[in-house]
Image 1 (tube, rainbow, N blue to C red):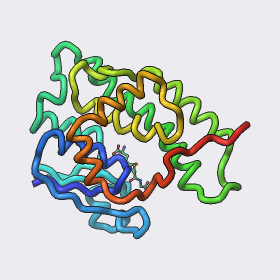
Image 2 (cartoon, protein in one colour; image 1 turned 90 degrees about the horizontal axis):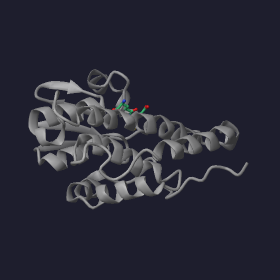
Image 3 (cartoon, protein in one colour; image 1 turned 30 degrees about the vertical axis):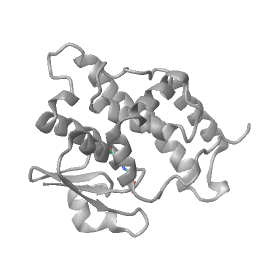
Image 4 (cartoon, protein in one colour; image 1 turned 90 degrees about the vertical axis):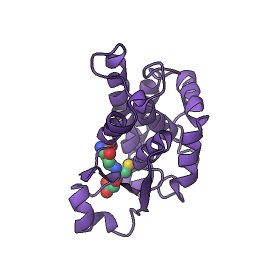
Length: 210
Ligand SMILES: N[C@@H](CCC(=O)N[C@@H](CS)C(=O)NCC(=O)O)C(=O)O
């Protein structure tokens, strides 16, 4: 049995979506950023930084979403990854990790717009710069970008683009890529199971004029 500690809209959505794609039996343990449960010693034993996702899988704890997705593919769904030595492996790895380039800007924008609650704490310059850098990074993403066929790299990227639409107008290629992700039945099932919004309560967070 796989157990997933999950906060709606967070990176644990990547794992939720992957589990739906695979059809693997699992339990979801809903968590909150607001009740300090992620700082409990039990949770810190699973995730030393006190974050989500955390999983128990095959008798071990894991807490890095990219590693969890790759492990799930290797152990349960080889069609969702490109194997070592197979054609397309380099593009697959590139896409899997390019999601982190997008993720760095998303984390900064989330911190500026949402985590910092008072205007005096925020930097309009950082908000504009991060939105611009996110938009530029998104220009590399297009339909079938990851490896030609759908796999876990599309999940890491798809989640990032899904979040990015709250901060920037998506370039055409990224919008088409997201539309393909959103059309997947497994994505729709994961959205239905995600839970009430905890992070993003607005559809769009515009950068301040400057
Ligand atoms: N590299 C980790 C990052 C995990 C992470 O930062 N998760 C965020 C939610 S998206 C979190 O739990 N934040 C809570 C905190 O920082 O206290 C991954 O991809 O799984």
